[in-house]
Figure 1 (cartoon, one colour):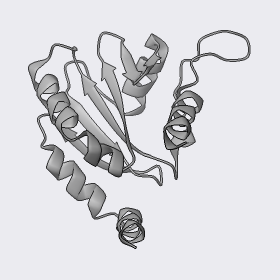
Figure 2 (figure 1 turned 90 degrees about the horizontal axis):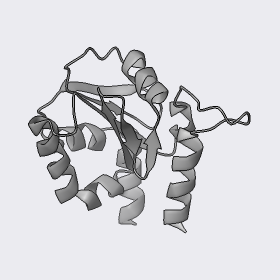
Figure 3 (figure 1 turned 90 degrees about the vertical axis):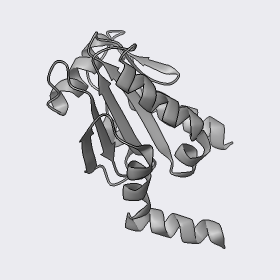
Figure 4 (figure 1 turned 180 degrees about the vertical axis):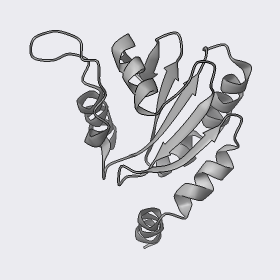
Length: 150
């Protein structure tokens, strides 16, 4: 049930097509508000070594990512992007780069809290433990941890 809910949120949030059948060139980040924290990774290319290193950190700590209800957007300068398993079109990638003022060549990580506010903006490389510390200090996360401990 949780997995189904997660996939439904992904599909609603990204919404790659509109009623007219034309691809949308925006990403409705508000669709995730109060449901998930977002981590948006901006990188020049998929093969960028700094980006690859950060992706490896994420893969090693998958359970901790899930426990924090964290969804990860990958946004490449080449116009590719995804919120696994949903791809982002070039317009959506451009929208995110413009929305967060990402310049060519930048490697940036942006953390958005469940309240929809930017909580952290750092240049890669960054240690995932730092991001987890920021999340774990959030009042909503503190409440979640107390609820799960019961």
